[in-house]
Length: 82
Image (cartoon, rainbow, N blue to C red):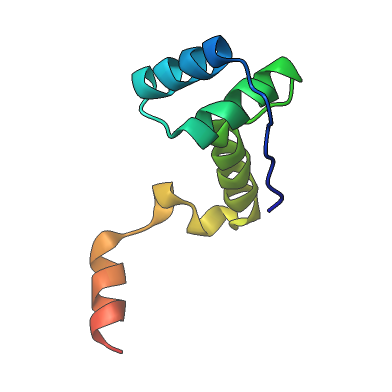
């Protein structure tokens, strides 16, 4: 992953970034990435990425194997038989 070093960063910007990182329970580097992404209007939501992945996975399951049709007792017996 690339890194970035910022020279001659104004003290007030550094302090604001540091305070916001503390409020959001992030490291200074994480807060800088989030702030840059927002400023550049780049989506960074991990929640959205997880939801898309779960939808992909759910779309690949055959209908007869969906969670609604699984019998937990049968699954346990099958697992014990291994």
